[in-house]
Length: 162
Image (cartoon, rainbow, N blue to C red; front, side, top):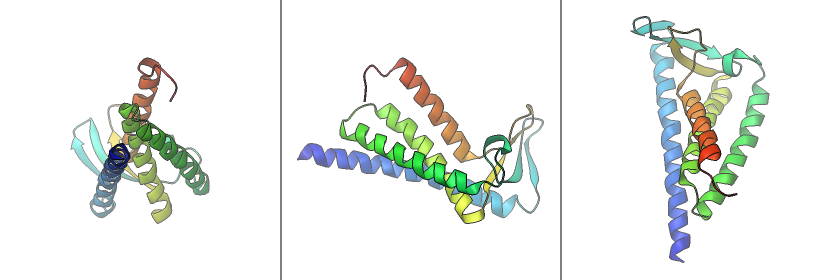
């Protein structure tokens, strides 16, 4: 019985972690909507980083412009799969590092999902000046970091099926 309560508590804490990540993404986007949208760009670190407000109606690097329904559907399917695997791992008390990576991916996906539903576009603002790269946001950072961590864990750490 205590084990079930402990696993529910653990699942709740992981849920709070995901919520915190989502809220961090929302805060940055709301801040940029209020303060950056009217001016467009603001230098942060000379020749390295500026904030540039972009309404991204596509995916990474602007592909599939205007196909919001595709991203909404994909996010629902992938989000459900992530939650399913997270629950399995939490119930089995296995691989908290993988649950961490999945939380990053899920929070980022939900952050951009929210934007697509609320605004019809994703709010992007990080603009790296030292390289020709797409403008991105905090949710994108979560997704990429979570995916990299997940791949590394699967390649080098996971010793058995989960």
